[in-house]
Amino acid sequence: MTPPASRPGGTPEGRCVQAVTWRRLESPGTEHCELWESAAGPLLTGTAVLVSEGLPLLVRYTVACDPDWHTREARLVLHQGGTRRTLVLQVDDHQRWWRDGRELPELRGCVDVDLSVTPSTNTLPIRRLGLEVGQARDVTAAWVRLPDLSLERLEQRYTRLSASLYRYESAGGAFVAEVDTDAQGLVTHYPPGWERVATSEG
Image 1 (cartoon, rainbow, N blue to C red):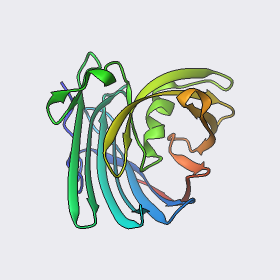
Image 2 (cartoon, rainbow, N blue to C red):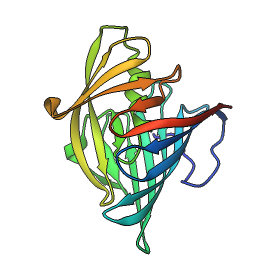
Image 3 (cartoon, helix red, strand yellow):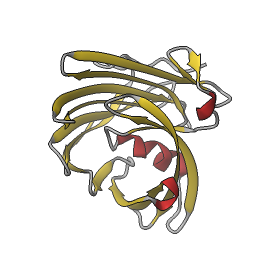
């Protein structure tokens, strides 16, 4: 069974470990994200305000994990151009994925959710893998593309370069970035996409 997650905009149960604000580098945008601890496992909540296809875009999300940082549930609410859309993903103990109650066989076996609108979901494999410096690991994520909320299976690779720096590769090396993180595994700098501008501990 999936652990309960608060709906976007609600207050999770547990303790807020850290809050961060990121600004987008390649286009206008900002995000507020919080990392929570709960009895069921870690939880990410965030609100991003962006420009997409020339239109204002507001996205609220929650991602709930089990204690080992496996994604168990993701909820998104998107507002753009007067339109509101939602997405609910749930993952069972056999890594079967369900969208709004319908199974998605093409995502079976994916461990992480990767939300294209935020750098927060890079934290999930970084924390779960616990790589030593010099180690690398391949993972498979369910990639949520915005603003259309389409889903895609995405092969990824993480290599730990130093105590805080990771090389991230996806789609067989078609995209490569060096991602700097803090002690919680939350992004501090992720060119060409994001950089942190403020943080606080709970």
